[in-house]
Image (cartoon, rainbow, N blue to C red; front, side, top):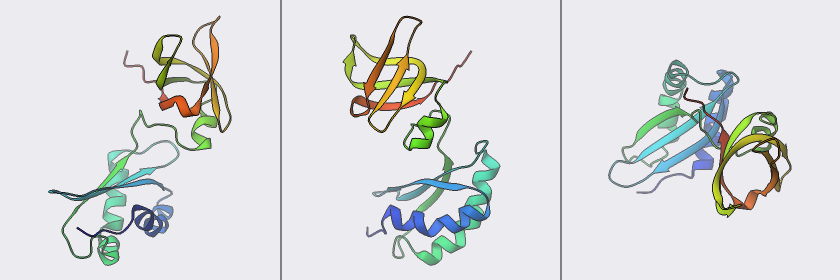
Length: 154
């Protein structure tokens, strides 16, 4: 199935998101038996189901006019990035300095591939993590598979 590039779809949707004070964070295209386009949105204060529904309704007709799949059927999904969304942009890291995060590593550090601790620093190449009063270290971002806000289920 031929489909337009995710970046083209994202750019097309930006004005509609802006009207609702939203940002389009990502567009994920799934091809195959049940093709779909999933649009991930965000806004200050978070995204709830009602917000997803409003944006879905706002883009339903315009995206059909864009015809991202050149006439082929697909399912359009709108979603938040979720509470455990990975940090991708500088702002994600900077806004979480001083908060507890979870870090999943490619290669182990001190015998472990998973840490949670306080994010104490960030630059474009490394993050600083404080895992205890006596244990603070710097992690090369190339070694990070995923870093996100810590979620306490208690």
